[in-house]
Amino acid sequence: MLLILLGSTGCRFSVDALQDVGPAGDADLAMPADGAVRSDPVDLGAPDDLTAPPVVQGDMAQDPCAGAPPPAAGAIGAQCVIGNPPTIDGDLSDWPQGSFLGMTSTTAAQAEGSWGGPLPDDEDSSARFAVRWDLTNLYVAVSITDDIRETPNAPPGLSDNDALEIFVDGNHDRTTSYGSDDWQLVYSADGQKAAARVSLVSWPTGAHEAWGGTSPSFTVEAAIPWSALGGSAAAPGRIVGFDLKLDDNDEKSKTTRDRDLVMYYVQPSGAGAPSCAAPYCRTDVFGAVQLQGR
Image 1 (cartoon, rainbow, N blue to C red):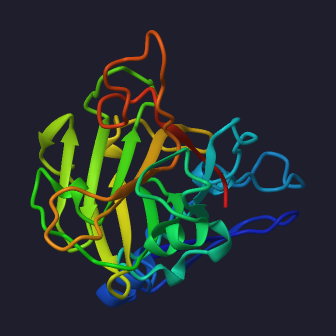
Image 2 (image 1 turned 180 degrees about the vertical axis):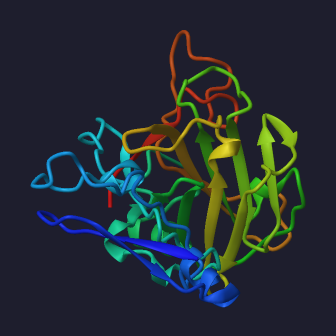
C-alpha cells in the first residue's frame, strides 16, 4: 500500500490510502519518464505554524550554477551547463556562437613562424574557441580554419602536424613543472591524439573528444573530466589554468610545422629568463578559465 501526503500552505494535511498499483505503477512513481534522478524535499511534514510557508531543503534550494563571483582579472569565463551539457560529436552548433573567442595572429599572445599580412594569416591558420563546464567535465570547443591539410607525423611529433593543443592546470597552482593535475593534450587534424607532461603519458581516464568540420579546416570538441584535474569539486568561481596552441604545417610530408599560435603564453626574454618557459615545460605561464554561471 502506498501513502501520498498532501498539503498546502494554511491548510491541515490529510493522509489517504491508495490501493497498491503494482510493479508498473511503482516504477513510474520511483523514476520520471526521462530517467533523470531528482531530489525530493527532506521533510514534507507540516510545520508547527501552519501559516508558515513550506521550507525547500537540499539541492532544490539553489541552482548549482548560481553564485559565481565577478570574473577574475585576465580569466576567460566558462558557461555552466549543468543539466544540459554539449554533445561531444565534433558538431559545434549546440554551442552559443556569441561565446566564442577569436585566435588569430593579432589576438594571440604569441605568433611564431612564417607570417604575412593579417588576412592570409587567418586563412592559413586561425581559430575560434569556447569553454563550458558541468559537475563532470570541463568542455572545450575549437573551430580551426586552415587552407592546407598536412599531418605527416605520429606521436610524439603531433605538434608538427596541423594540430590543436589544449593545456590545463586543474589546481591553478602555477608551478614550474607538471603535476598530476596538469595536461598537454594534442589533437592532430587527422584524429590522432597524445597526452604529455613534458614526456608522453597515458590519455586522461574518462576524457573523450570528437573531430568534425570539412577538410582542410576542422573542429575539435573535448570533455576533460574533473577527476583528471585534481579531483576538486567544480563550482562557480573555480579557476583552472588554461592555454591553447594552434600548429600549422603547410608543406607536404614536411616533418616540422611552418607556424604556430599560442593564445595566452608570452615568451619571457632577457636576463633571468628560464631555458624553457613554454607551456609544454611549465604551468605558471598558462592563462586561466573561471567557472561562471548560466
